[in-house]
Amino acid sequence: MTNAELTKETVAGTAESAEKARIGAPSAEAQAASNVRRIAGMNEEGEQLSEINPVSSPLGGAAAKSHSHGAGAGIPDSSRAGRLTSYNAADFAPITGREEDWRFTPLKRLRGLDKVALDGAAPGLSIQKPDAVRVETVDRCDARIGSAGIPDDRVSAAAWGAFTEATVITVPADFAGTAEDHVTTVTLTGAGEAPAASHLFVHAQANSAAVVVLDHRGSAVVSENVEILVEDGAQLTVVSIQDWADGAVHASSQQMKIGRDAKLKHVVVNLGGDLVRINPSARFSGPGGDVEMYGLYFADAGQHFEQRIFVDHAVPNCKSRVTYKGALQGKNAHSVWVGDVLIRKEAEGTDTYEMNRNLILTQGARADSVPNLEIETGLILGAGHASATGRFDDEQLFYLQARGIPEDVARRLVVRGFLNEIIQQIKVPALEERLRDAVERELKAGAL
Image 1 (tube, rainbow, N blue to C red):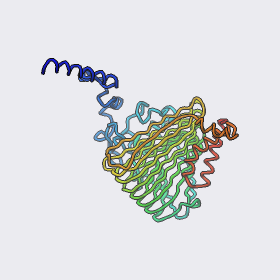
Image 2: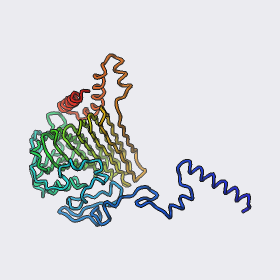
Image 3: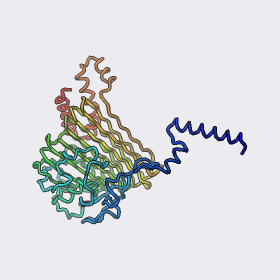
């Protein structure tokens, strides 16, 4: 190589280094240095798992311990698919608040649901149902229990180990009960503030169609597991309403399994309680499945409403839609929404989208929103997510005020319209009216 060529190469290398520096890429010198000096817990892909849970801890795989339903499963990595599942609370490390799954949750307000004996009385049940729908009280050894899901956190596993009886609601095969008078309503009334466990199993048999409402009321400190099994060709709507008294604490893991060509609509409504944490998880077991997951929450001063959604696309040609919307008002009103969607490599033809919207009505309120997509195959129809948190749309308010509507009335109209998109998905007129009235009471309480 001639001196001229060497000079040309040197100039080109200098220009390349300058360009990399401009856009934030590491220079060759920096890359060489990084091979010698590495920050603990970091590599080229970014931050790695911390050492809070060391390799020897029971995070899954070979480290998971046996229990009455078989060994725990899971891979201790950063993938949502690697989360430990186990019926045994001892398989899970104690919760410190530094875990990704618990970093937003005020653990002191859990009232011991993660670490004390859940020996309080479970919420009382009152059920209104069509004659054809069967309701049974079974013990924990019933073969159906555990067929729709396995606990994937310590609180859910603790509740699993503590319950003695479960309520099983069965919609028989080929039953068509989508009219309002065919709705099954389960009213769960808190039995006090002693930490308790509760277990429900909702079973829609093949080619059935029904609506099941879970209506939580009163005072309670309860960890609840809800299993929802939707067999092939069935169409089921489940509405879970948390309208607790002010001091209630409620953690609910709602595990859903959707069969071939089955459709599930799942609606979560959070209105009352001190701390409410709902974890809906949907898993497809056959192609052609369709799940719609909706959520509505209205957090007042001091309330903590947390929703962590997981959709597991493990089979081909399934569809999912997630839409959660919330309003917050008052000091320390706090909402958390985390949406995890996993598309496994086998799930070709997947069509999925998740969205979260938050409307901050006053100073002092906070909304955390974290949408996540994990995609292991490119052979899909579509995948996307969206998240937005903000105050009133000035253009909407201006439009209404320009037509003679006072500002306070205009603000209420905007909030009603914002949340009504979720309410109208329920398709049960009496229940929709009740929720619209509840939103109106929240607005009046906040003097909005």
